[in-house]
Image (tube, rainbow, N blue to C red; front, side):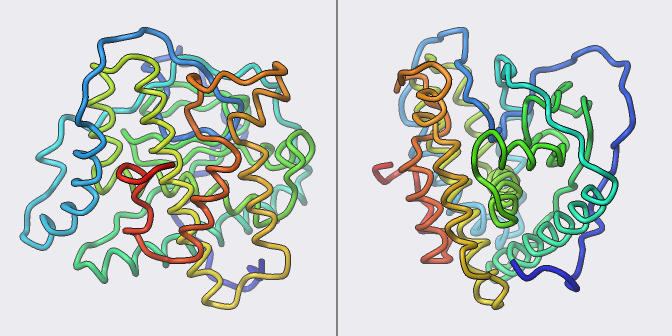
Amino acid sequence: MRWKGRRQSSNIEDRRGASSGRRSANPFGRGGRLRLPTRRGGARRATGGGITMIIILVVGFFVLRALGIDPALLLDGGGGLTQSQQTTAPGNRQLSPQQSDEMTQFIATVLAETEDTWNGIFQSNGVNYQEPTLVLFTGRVDSACGRASSASGPFYCPSDRKVYIDLGFFDELAQRFDAAGDFAQAYVLAHEVGHHVQNLIGVLPEFNRLRRTMGKVEENRMSVRVELQADCFAGIWAYYTGQKGLLERGDLNEALRAANQIGDDTLQRATQGFVVPDSFNHGTSEQRKTWFTRGYETGRLEACDTFNNPV
């Protein structure tokens, strides 16, 4: 990706080197972690009709804002979507000062590119895009959704509208998950920003409301659709980045390689030797690649309807 010399976002909060003495608070904000999938506990009675409601929100968001109505006022709360446990993956390797400095500049540039993309899309629909903040941390971090460690991987917290990343994750993405390349790293950030877009248009708050009455299997299935939509939104960002002439040969393959390596089925085969489809909560490798590609090929928000289309 041709990123050097381009604008870098100022929406960055650097907490690297800071230590937190707080105890764990609320569960993590459910925004899609690009690490080993986890199973959710606490089966509850299922309910229907949620998928249709979510996609109505996607379309209705822009209509309501055009009428001067704040969609957030129509939603139940807006708290974080919980994840029951962290992964047991090893911690990330520390970056050298030189690596860290260049990686910070790169990730700030990618964040700026996502801002440009989504500002343009929202403005074309008569809506102001509220840019997220990127929090850089090492080791552990406290968010409005609770306390997380580096082993949890990058995540988005709906409650404070912030994306959290330990940059050491990208080294592990290359070494442990065999998904190297700067565009693979850019895909990770674009996916988390995709969850921020979902939060703004009402998808995450509505999922948070509906999941309280869902059984584990149904919750996982809807979670897959949420995650695949975030992949599709990442693809939309890649589309507009390509329109600017910023993509280099092999960039798209790097993103697709990353999507493949973090699919639920691929990760489960690698860690336990078999797959349990009912426990999938991010999507298979093929699904993740398919929906990222759909966003990349169309560049259209409406093409990312994972709720009313087969996934």
